[in-house]
Amino acid sequence: MATTYFTTDHEWLRVEGGIATVGITDYAQEQLGDLVFVELPEKGKKLSKGDTAVVVESVKAASDVYAPVDGEITEANGSLSSDPSLVNSAATGNGWLWKMKLADESQLAGLMDEAAYKAHIA
Amino acid sequence: MTGDDTKHLPLEDMHIAAGARFGAFAGWSMPLTYPAGVMKEHLHTREQAGLFDISHMKLFELSGPGSAALLNRACPLDAGALEISQSKLTFFLNEAAGILDDLIVTRLGDTRFMVVANAGNAVADEKHLRSLAGDFDVKVDALDGVFLAIQGPEAWAVLSRAGIETGSLLFMHGIEPRKNWFMSRSGYTGEDGFEIGLPEADARDLVAKLLEDERVLWIGLAARDSLRLEAGLCLHGQDITPETDPAGAALMWAIPKEIRASGAFIGADALRAAVERGPAQKRVGLKPEGRQPVRAGVALFDADGNAAGHVTSGGFGPSAGHPVAMGYVATPLAKPGTRVFADVRGTKIPVDVSSLPFTPHRYRKG
Image (cartoon, rainbow over all chains, first blue to last red; front, side):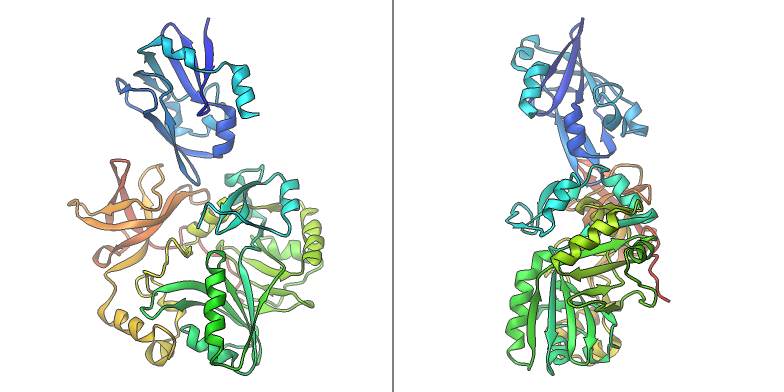
């Protein structure tokens, strides 16, 4: 059973079997506007919490998306190379950004659940 | 330029009602996008008609027997040679020929002119004009009110439906169609369009009429920026600054030949010297390879890794369908087709020097 967590930087993580699928929230994609390019990470890259994992570019600006926890990239969402607008149309579905193997599952305890995130953006 | 948003547009309530998202620009709280989003707003302007609130820009009316002489001193311009209703792009230069602002000057009458200045420089421009005006018999009035731009192939038709006929007005001409109105066929998107300065009550009425037309959409500052960049038009403070002169900025076309030779405008000697020695760097269009935008501030290198210039504006061009940028490169590299490399977060992205504009201008010249 997957559990979804949220960060104050407007990312979501769906964790299943020690692997987190990470994306930005619907609120975040709406703030960014139409995305035209996503700079994806390489498989095997090790990230510490707070490192820039992905850069998403809208017509107007580039924005960093940070690693919400420590871990290693296992996959990047290749569909975004040809269709970055998936992040706008399906931020929490097909518009996911990367998957990472968690280095320290205890870090998840510091993240928000959906109710807390909804209160955060309210 | 950004960060401070102390000034509010007179029509702010209409933008709020339209669902605008606001941001700080040049001291103003400005609508950046509306619910349609920047991509749709941009494309809509090229296909139909975009309505922009540009009341952050400043209109000055100069009147009196010395008004042409004042303009000839302040700008590399022969103001007296303009026909009545003719508009011209010109500049305020400093003594070093650096561009203090770019302006549109329109001749309204024998001794009356309208000057449209950029928001970011409005206060400095007014001070500059007033201090120069002391030497001439001229009155400088800064106008209050609303300033709207209606841009796109349907702009003339939606104005006509709203009761404003534009038929005989051609690109780069301006008139006073009603009391306290100023309307020019000009704009900053590369499309046919109009800029209209008018009192707030009239503006509310006009906006309401225009928005009844399904061809009209409010367009925010974000799309205004991508539209003007695709059209190869400079943004003061970015593509042109007090550190760049009209020669390096490839804007000498805006300066009449005889004025280059003998004009007595501020910065004339420095500009002549700059033209004589040739600019070290020139403003060019830049077309990045692939989909990744290359943005303002990014450094450019030649094939051997030597510094070659920098990007001054960059983003994605929704109509062009690829990233578009503008910047300065060393003069020997300024030929279209020359390949340079942009350093984006450590990755060298190939970029071709390109002719401007990226999307063809569709002005109504006659």
